[in-house]
Length: 271
Image (cartoon, rainbow, N blue to C red; front, side):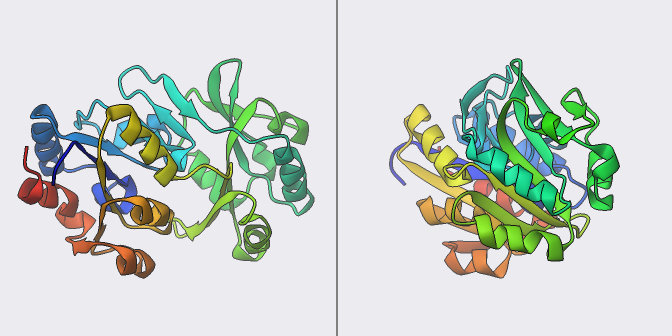
């Protein structure tokens, strides 16, 4: 292919194995190729904090797409390069959730710092289990609903029963970017709500422009990769991907447990 190419991979279920880590082989291949000039980034629902933990050993230095595209961040400094925030309509959305007994994790910037807020005594079991894996400086336990409304909000995560969450997905999916799916590790039902222009695809297009690339090649496994695949010039679904994603992919590659992305890069990227 001609021109500069940006390669963008999802993490969970795609670049990561089931132990939530990139393998030594994947690290070696991608590090070797980026050292020779390949432009590689990842686009994930994770924060930069947890993404960097699970990709320890991976040395891709270009900006990263996190929170499903809500933020583009500098991989080396942690600086926010681009951000999408909710408008004031988010307060009515949150009040609607509270009224139904759904108390989400609310991600926002407060006084220049990235924080996630939650009311622990009102959290679902799945929420508490998730929070137990996210013990870092972003944590902001609060006591009141009003405190959940603080700051510049950019991401909302609900973990609860499908009976509670599906009606919200149906109501808000046309107004916001909503991802409704079961977590691949815990099996818990998630509903993630983002500002309407927040997608991995939109963030990848911005990153493409920043880097002066002509094409995007994408890798993924989940429903939240659909827009990215529809936008990319080429897209490859891992063998373990959702059937809907496979249907729109350029091709199917080996699964995440067999380092399918790294094998494809090693065999196909010419620098």
